[in-house]
Amino acid sequence: MAFVAILLTCSRVRKSEEIGPNFIIIFTDDLGYGDLSCFGHATLKTPNLDLLAAEGQKWTQFYVAAPVCTPSRAALLTGRYPIRNGMTSSKSAVLFPNSEGGLPSSEITIGEMLKQKDYATAAIGKWHLGHHPGFLPTSQGFDYFYGIPYSNDMNAIDWSQYNKNTDDPNYQTETENYNVPLMENQEIIERPADQNTITKRYTEKAVEFITAQKDKPFFLYLAHSMPHIPLFANEDFRGSSTQGLYGDVIQEIDWSVGEIIKTLKQLHLEHNTVIVFSSDNGPWLAFKTHGGSAGPLRAGKGTTFEGGQRVPTIFWGPGTVKPGTIHEMGSTLDIINTFAALSGTRLPEDRKMDGYDLSGVLKSAESNSPRNNFFYWTDAKLYAVRVDEWKLHIQQTEPIFYWRKTQPLDTPQLYNLEADIAEKYDRFDAHPKIVSRLKKVIADHLEDTKDRMPDNLAARTKDAF
Image (cartoon, rainbow, N blue to C red; front, side):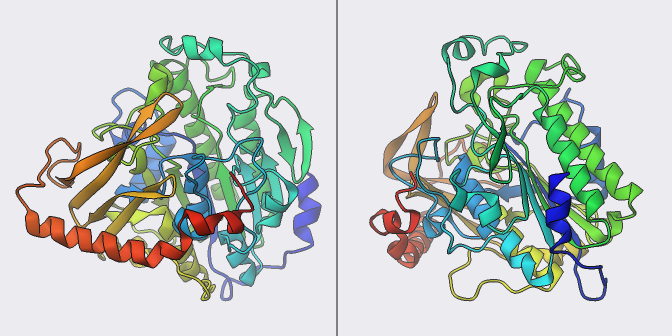
């Protein structure tokens, strides 16, 4: 309960006419587009998420700004492509325990923005935007942090056994094999973290935070460590699915969502709360039965194909979100703009923002999304662009177990994502005018971001990677 005293010092009694809704982002790690029953999985049971989708909006063309952890999370919290906020690098895809830096303090997060209206803020779960004091959530707009500072597979003592056993859907390694710290604010309170109970403990802390803030506006960023490998499930959920340990993990996350909704309803907060559920990137297919499914999409985590960056996303909020299925484009880049509109707070005006306000779509389920384009960046390089239904690849990423390689394309590849969701049929030769138009869009975007290219990023990130 350490966070209660901290939060009470920065809170005030809610006046509904002055303050917008509460916000909760539930961000999973490596969840695939095909891993929920409401997104087409045939046997996994996700009743709480299915209900969230039925009562809210299911977005079928929603994108994260990078196909790996660190840059994706930075984009979500700042509304800026990682090439702008400094969280991308040609040296390394993500931050590691030996990394020195993190998200620059000059960046403005959703938490910092909502402080304009005295929101209480908490980050619970995985952070992965810098583990030294100046980069932890408590230095980035959050009053309270409880979680792990980077991915749950880092600080591994022995990788070999896990790597050998992912053909077995029921294999579970020892949690002691990963010397990952569990932190509260800036203190390590457990090491190695007991990952068997970590989803349950994240959920308990989230419920405590919501309960403590029931009379005040709050923003909860609940970023689950799972289903990133190594997989761990509480004993109450082991064997609960027909999909082995991966399915057990997903069904425990679904339980966690149910606990959040139950708490909101018990406190009569459901009509003044907006929830966003999504994933930081696609499934880690290299880990076979422990890696999830991209459904009909091509490839997965680490690639700029749809399976790497199109993620299952749900918006829920009975007092704000009109139910429906949205087939237009959206992105985690848009969340900060949308929260600003709903809360009456101001976006940063001294920098280029890459998001759009989706609140009109949320409120009507009929308005057109303001987003009609998306740029696929990774490793400080632009790989593809989408405009309306057309996607042009200028180079590609191919996963090689943990790492990736760039595959140069002698000729760009063009796909119609409305007619060809799996990116199987290259239409480059058939549509030269569309190719020419998309090349111009790419050229304009590269011009717009040239001052943030790798040569200029190092100083901003303090050699983060």
